Length: 442
Image (cartoon, rainbow, N blue to C red; front, side, top):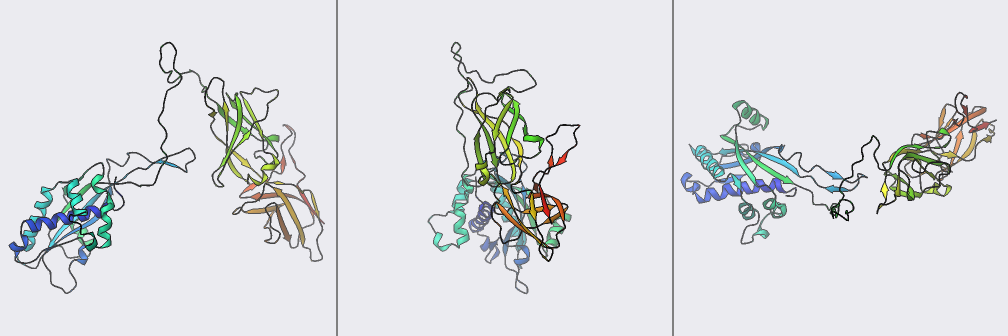
């Protein structure tokens, strides 16, 4: 594949092709004047008030995606979405406008005829032609501008598909719109398409190892088992169906024991897998024994208090891993969402107002606050921002002017995730009640 320099490389090769053709056919002798080849925008070819010299101009006016290569080798990433496994080529078609300029009679027509003949005789830009144009021999690199020296590394001659040059018909209306948009006087012109330029990134990617076998080998037939088919609605692989925090809460907190429900979860070395892409967390927690429950349908683990500095408030992807009987390698399940909410540890709290009616207090919570996280305390129905002074990873200080007197329910909200305030442990038809998460202001 080519690099990002390929677009400029194609233009440079076409210009070199036209230059060589004009010299080989002695076009300057035919016209009686020198002829140059430029790659400028048409409005910059003729200087305002200057004379119009004999000149061929090749202008790339449009770049379009190539329809044949557009869906080839789509970008592939790993399960986390961070590591790229392959780079899809950027396939482009380049559209050129060939125009001729001259102040002499019939000079423009002669130049157009020679230019179109040269492009007709080279319908495919061969690898040798590209190599000769971009890396001439003998080496004259020191005399070339930096931009032209850089084109040697375009890789254009080594791309998989060669570049084909084809004439393109533009109707009088399309040609008129094109020249009007360029704000230049019309000149004899012909349109061409160069296809296809394949640009591909050269960053390293992760390449998976080849597959050695497709299952265990049958000792009698000496054949690999291949894909085992087990008819049924439930797949015969470990799978999670729900992540259930305690007390029927929709969120988990540090210190909670989480139940992962599913099927085919039995095996040895069972672990719960937690990941959070925002904070770069990817860790495994040992599973607890599940007394009185079917190990194949339940995997239980605890968010121990020691994890308060490791697992911030946020949304996690939780899965399970185990080594099943008779299998050589551990299996991992699908991933489910699990929300970790803050837990306030010093409530209920009694606070006395000062003489001006201002209440000052500090909330202690877990897990620790991370840089970039936004914290808000909701007292009753009012939100309050913490003070900058007294802010630590596990404490927030608040100063509330004209604080209302009374017992107010408190909810700590971090990045939009609130600490639970409703006790859902009672099963219906019992009426839900509020937890004793209150700040008593007197």
